[in-house]
Length: 270
Image 1: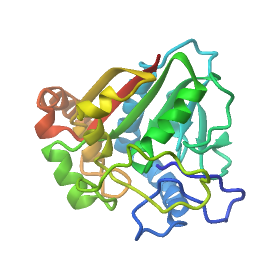
Image 2 (image 1 turned 90 degrees about the vertical axis):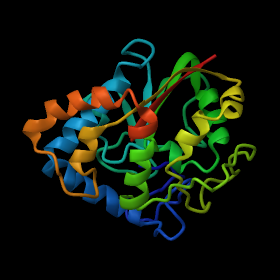
Image 3 (image 1 turned 180 degrees about the horizontal axis):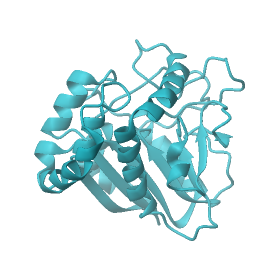
Image 4 (image 1 turned 135 degrees about the vertical axis):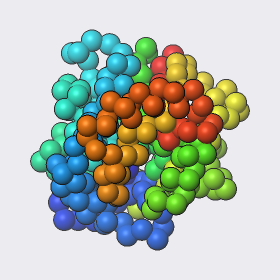
């Protein structure tokens, strides 16, 4: 999933604010979404692991059920399976999505959002601090931003470095001082899978989050997710072995530098 500028109609090329690597065709994102919708129905372990991760997000939401929870970069839009009140959005209109939104220019009024959810979106934001400025505008005091992202412990480094089509970006500089572009309609595509891992392990970055309290940075192995094959590989884990995989995860999670493949970050608006 990624976050981009507004696409006005189905069939148009989506203008991308923080998309895939520059060699990746811009309009391939919509093709990926359609492919992912088919794979979602065919892969029960994938559905189970994603719903488990969305359940972890749901347990960290602030406020009451009547308050606004907005997901950016919803892709195929299955967050509602776990968080029914979630407002889904992406950079293109689709029947299964509620809104078209950009991480750099959210259409809600100031303080109108209680929770922002970004699942595999943060590493597509070329201007993360510019996005956080916009998040600080729309999220009320005490509200939260919840990120679920790739993590690059040694296992994650191998998995994403060898089998994932997006670049790790470990040697790419992160635009921490650059503001979001004035126009979100035609920036260069972007992806750096390791950005969340790099940024929230960096004390200088964490200290610079003036508008936010960091409530949680959790890294976990997501062994069952790996066994599902994700959206790009075959399902290797039989469904009946899911409980065993989840049990093994609890052990591997004690060693995140070795086994972390996923991470969750929870920020609270000051």
